[in-house]
Structures are given as structure tokens and as C-alpha cells.
Image (cartoon, rainbow, N blue to C red; front, side):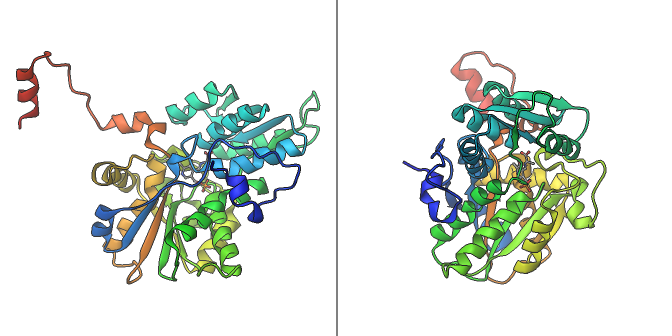
Length: 354
Ligand code: F0G
């Protein structure tokens, strides 16, 4: 049975008192992407993180954070979220018997993610403010003594170090699957609060130090309307169709910059149109339905290929961070459901036009 805590035990902060919590996270598929390889001239792979139990990459870090919270005697966990962290925290808290509170920007959470948080019975706290404000509030609520009842609440955003520890296992899986990672490997991923790029870089450097791998280049991509790392300063009012990465002041800012600079990589911006084009390309040409934010990394490498900026002979792994089923509204916004037809072969043949 797959269990991230036991598979990577030697690399994780697991003690004899840590409950071996699992919903079957990790061990996600790494598949070839032939259409994208033709489009970019590189050898491209997709890491399907939407195949995690709650449909996003967050489960890798959340299983460790919630297991450690249980070990340390917590009764409740809290997070700020653009949706996926909330869904993941809610599921693992339900499994572990903890109360879960999620602070979210009202009106800016994809429907599937909200449904998950509600189904797992999280205390959903929508605020009139964006993710950055939600994170500030969640951090304050997690300060000891900040609730009138004096309850201790563990913060499970990626500033919780256990989140990054669990998240880095994505990097281990890439090396374990590809076998030989050479310096021509590039890892492309969307960047929001910057926990993921920080964690992947930590995973690769740990494997490198253990003599198991060379180091790849980290290619991070932000949405153009929410690109503080590209601009070099926080953004007051971030905007993008990719609500998961609608973040103006990433908590792991320094981790992202270190990953970029130490790996000789880059962090650049892609427009919403480019994100949506990549989102549709993946669905129509690769058969992979990811959420819009996940397509930002793919939009980025398409852009680099057009500008002839991909390293010669590049091998690229795109981290598809979340499932497309999370956000049915964005999927249907550009699609029209055909009107019902008479239930006859004739009507169906005519409609097919074949
Ligand atoms: N892709 C998806 C689907 C996400 O949900 C997120 C972040 C990211 C990429 C960016 O990852 O923050 O580590 O740089 N979602 C967070 C959340 C913020 O609350 O679910 P990051």
C-alpha cells in the first residue's frame, strides 16, 4: 500500500510517535507528453499531481503537517487558502479527527475546492480580502493565546516547515522515475505562495547531496497579473484567471529566489491568455485535464521555446499541480453545452456531420 510517510521515512521528520496517517498520497504518474514535445522541441514529461487523493499536490505536505500536529497534541488546524490547501487540510483533518478552519478570499475559490472543504466539514471563513490578507489573519489566529477559549491551533500553510518537508518528495519521485537526471533537466511549475518551488529545490538538493542525482534547473512561472517575484516587489491587488496562484506577496519569497538562482533557472510571467491556451492544449492534445494554475508552467515552456530560450537537448518535467475537475466554471466558460437532440439515430448522425 502506498504511504508517503513510510516510503520516504528516512528523509522526513518522522519519529516513533508520528501517526502514519495516509489517504494514499504521492506516487503520482510521470507521463510523456508527445504533443508538447513536438511543440517545444524538448523532451517533455508531465507529473500528474492532480492524481493525489484530494486532487492536488498539497497532499504531500499536508499529510506530514497534520501527522505532526496530531503528534504534538493539536486539536485544530487552520490555513489561509486559494482553495487547494483548504481542501487538503480539510480532508486530512477529517481523517485525523481534528477541527479544521480555512480562511479564504470570498468569491475567488474554484467550485470543486469549496465543495471539498464543505464536504469534509471544515469551518469555512470567507473574507472580504485576498489570499495575502487571509494568510495574515490565519497566522495571527494560530498565535498562542489568540483565541478567547485559549485553544491551540496549528497553522498548516507552507510556512509550517513540515509542509515543505512532505512536499519535497515530488522531487524524489522524479529522480526515482527518470533514473538518471542530468544537468539538462528543467522542472517547470506554477508559483503562487512559492512553497512548492522551495520544496522541490530542497528535494533535489537533498538527493544531490546523497549522491543520487545531478541538479536540475528550476523554471517558475507566475500569472502576469500576480507576478511579485518577477517584478521584485509585492503586488497589492493581484488578478488572474488562475485563482490558485492569485497571490501578491508569497510567504516563501526567499526560497523561490534561492531555487531560481542556485539552480541557474528563472521565474517569469505568463499572461492569462497564454495560461488558458496551455490549459486547452493539454486537454485537447495530451488528454490531460489540469486546473488553469497548473497550466502556467506549460505556458511558460511554450513561451521559452518560441523565443528559442530552452537549453539545447532539454528534458523538461512540468508539474501539473491540480486536477481540472477542481474548476468546472473555467472549463465551461469557453464551452457551450449542445442543446438536447431528438433521441433518434438520424438526429445524432446529422449532428455529428461525419
Ligand atoms: N498550483 C495550484 C493548483 C495551487 O493550488 C497552488 C497554490 C500553486 C500552483 C502554487 O503553489 O503556492 O506553493 O507556489 N495554492 C495555494 C492554496 C496557495 O491555498 O491552495 P505555491
